[in-house]
Image 1 (tube, rainbow, N blue to C red):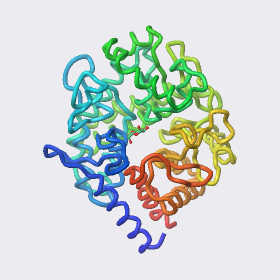
Image 2: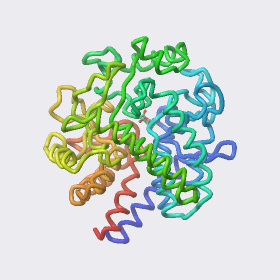
Image 3: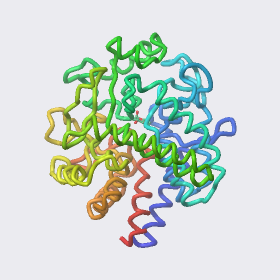
Image 4: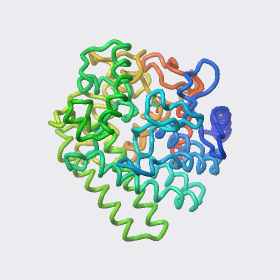
Length: 410
Ligand code: GLC
């Protein structure tokens, strides 16, 4: 990419993120989307969104990247059985009580990418205050996962609401929600009914699993967690705490080993329920194992073979559900659309395993979506049409993919 094109892309991303930037009570964060035509819920701060926003902001305004992550961890739960949890949503202007027993934040979480994001911001800014600010909260967050979300002690965390996965409406979760080929409204009703049930069971994963409630161990979520534990080890190392660095690196390895032992049969899969029944569905989540280095070289080759098939790689890759699956529904969110934050995770994994050309094409096709349609929440994989909400912050993550491409001389 030429310098002028890069500058223009950064200027566009900066405009978008600045238009979604919020400042409340001295805390700064970027809303997923804001303004006319956007559901009010997107004005709140969402956990994995903020991590992607920080990774974008590092190229535009590293101080804002730092503030984004510091505001995210500032609403960490500080007491009770869930002390250490970082909420999937911070409601800086209140309003959480609609679903939850608190007003300021949700009581469930989302993919833990905070150490990953902080480490990447530090690479550009060299700002140790960010690492010092997130280190303790992120340590407590990972301790919380082990304490509260691994009732069977297999090192794989379980989720108690589909919102925690970030893939809210994925067909991967239909069966665990007791649904079969649900309509949009049926699936939505099931998700909206769940918080009251979680509150009634004090968010206790073991009790919920015992009660037959939604309970899954997703392969992508656990892979992201392994990568975050690695990043936490890297942060401890930078801060000079070698013993802790070793301890976190060992935890990352234990999670990767568990993924390898329990979630791979040639190709990776998710597990459902206390009985850990495999969820045998192909999806873009399988490729996220590469992000964590959780696949062997042979498994990675098999994954990339699958990824290159037209059904996973249509005009605009990568649809969350392959285009020939019976559940493929490109207009329904998380049931076969392209999400650029997911593409970023896949891009990183491809680079990690040396599939630089495939990664380069993925970056170029992701950029094509933004250039043709703008930054939308998600996209149609066959036409490239923007779907969901417009002016969506995380789709500016193409900036980071393009920065990597430029660094390798493309
Ligand atoms: C949607 C997505 C979720 C995201 C949230 C805010 O609910 O499914 O992954 O975090 O929007 O962007």
